[in-house]
Length: 471
Image (cartoon, rainbow, N blue to C red; front, top):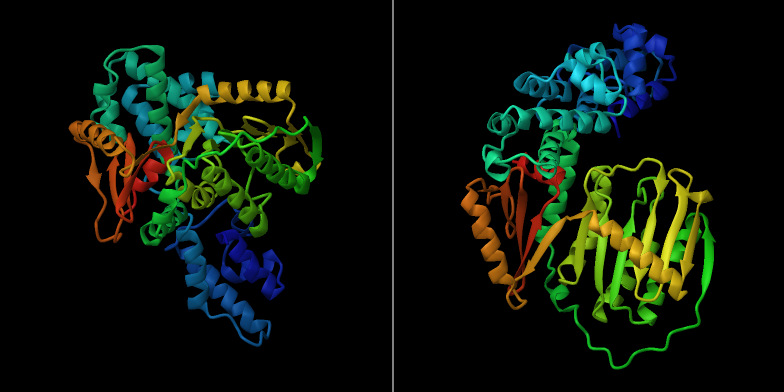
């Protein structure tokens, strides 16, 4: 529950208008309105929290509630919601101002590429305004800063600002690709302030789960030999409609891939899990179907939509991490792609394909196309290939039980350590996990699985940033 929702629940329980609540709490109606709308959140230790707690408790006594509110409990409850949404590190406007001041970027430079006014950029730098589309504003600002940073030979200065002192070693000379890489580093640093304490708590829960679960049985779910090539069913093509139809289509796709003993599977979807939650029964059926495919030796390439809210990414990882451990799943993500309009589904195997035609928040009116027609499948295989060409590796996965994998990991690890930027997280946090953080580069997670060890090298900048700020 957010601070706004918690405050609103108290107001509704008291059955008082916001004007009455504001007067009792000694706040202006506009201030209370901004709190209730979620447009403003007071500091957890501010005087306004005390005013709200005392005022709500007083109103509960006046209203004759059978169990009047306790001011201390109200204050604790409200403050707890605020702590969960506090930013990590400097706010966005402070980072933007520090970056522009360091490199000498003018307000007019940012205004030109963001389609705004220099005075508006100035107000953002002072914290008086927040961009309506913050990710887009940050991305455009990062590209401007990267250009001037390289042009003015200030990579070393930038490295000191963003906590990557060795950045100049990776990008000694200018070219378009490297400017793009510098821009990505800046963008992640700018948006780092949008990571909240609640995000870190959720990631900590995931790591704790990894530390405590026994995944050793998943090491054997791989490379089964096929006795014969199954007969291919007659080609089919059909449409499904709505969310229920989409779920049916996903299961039909996986079952067809299993029936035809597909050796390759490509899965890409940006389904918004929070608006169309899959439900426990579907999740179990989906997971069982994937496990069956892995047991036949199928190789899966999955494209994760990590630009969605972190909660969705973590929810997805609970399902996928055990599958990663088989060594048959290759996870990817698309850099900087944050789709807010269309819902895309691209599922492809050797024998069938599934795609979507839907608008986000209107999936119930969406149409989903499932086909086994060879020409269709060939088309969708080419399409997913083009998508993967633009994708980046989310995890590199090394299993010590596979020939050559341990040596490959140690060789890569030695190269990372030679840079001299890695540090281990406190051993007191976990009993089994060993986590090494390379700020601005990657995070290495060593997970014991029985007699073997699985090494996950996490490449996604935002997740690496969060882990680097965990204690």
